[in-house]
Image (tube, rainbow, N blue to C red; front, side):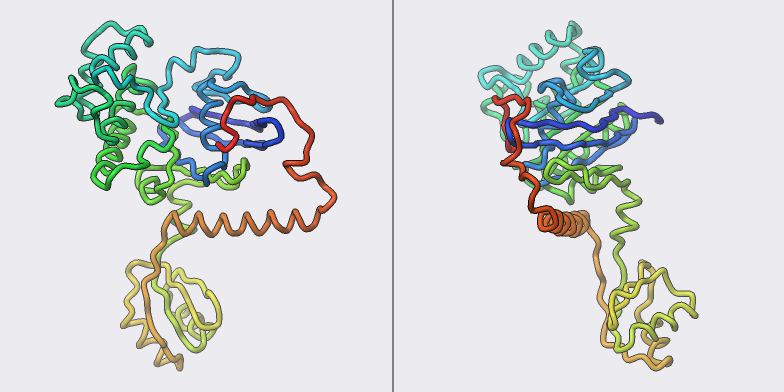
Length: 335
């Protein structure tokens, strides 16, 4: 699949004096599972609410499935969403909740309901009231309601929070099936970054209302690749020996450490080569890369930049000192 499913440009959103989003831009391509990463209060939920038309636009533009949000509601009929928590009625059964959702979407074929129940694995709970479902089952019900009308675009806000490991694994498989079997483009946020890494094809990292980084899964792997960490007494000399032998790619971390970015690097062979070249080898260890590590390093860099900007511009108004602008006071400012 090619093309852009979601194009966000220069979006800003304020709630009174609080800036939730500041000039945010991102693009989700058709067929992506786009993982949106950020701390509590970073602006993830606010952005998702804007995409769904649940919050009024202030600045910038959002094009969803070729339609401008705010000008046309046609695109909204082609999306499904679970934001904050599944909107199910506790006193109604799984089937009854889905019947209400079907009416909202103008669906009259009961096979759509049966298909959604089967897809999310709630066939044995179809007559169970929603309030008697486990957390994982309620999340499945929310997903069933969101995909009932076969949306082209699915938005999921923290869908796996609170699930046990088996529930997380099952939900992950459902998302992959939606993406691969139904060609559904998915925008998902989660605090469980290891799970987000396993399902996502692209990532966007948002910090204090700013989009600080967008990258693909291969780009993340290249930037955060695991490797063989070599501790030596002379890293520059070791680097010359490795380079002459054609071993790599590698990088020199400091005077005593090199990281060989190759899963097939043989520690025994490298040890012999370095020792013969006059390098004292102190040890080898495997360095594992992860989305968590990349995210925390990027966040630390961003916070340092924020401090430097604040120290360099003391006369500028801080967020809580800026003049009040148009906002929607009834919404959650911490999202």
